[in-house]
Image (tube, rainbow, N blue to C red; front, side, top):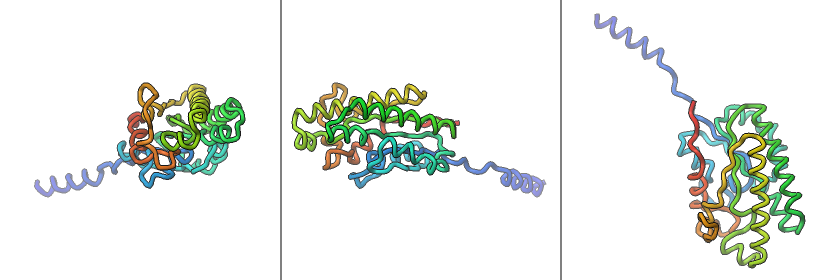
Length: 224
């Protein structure tokens, strides 16, 4: 009898289901999700760790919305198993307009079109939730921004940032993606807080605390 029980136990053990594959979070975007100037784990990695998921961070410093769209064919194999896609791009499009004195509206329209096409292509290849993240600033902010631009320049930077975020929000709405505002994390609920303590010395990228603040905004990862 004991032998029969032992054999049955071994057979059941042999039929046990293999461990579940952890979900995968894929990130597309620019230097912010890439973690430039931080020397820390950027928010996509922090978020994936919090959600017991695997992070595949394809963000590239300097990327524009057109660059991310053009890079989709090469990313297809990584996107296929994704449980969630994080998309944060558009700052460099508007930063160029800010630096050149060209139209924010034109740059924002380009961002909206490229991001809409990016999300549409992602969802056509592999239906997956997409979260589009906005920016607290598309250029330097905090103490570094004040030193670089002065009061008038900061007002122009705020206008460029608003144009980028409006475009990103519209692209998310156009495609059924989720838009996530990061402004409150850096500027507080009234929009007046100094974000210097959440920024790297360049004033253009988050430090470790800033990345943690962004990660904390992201919604829990849906499980099957």
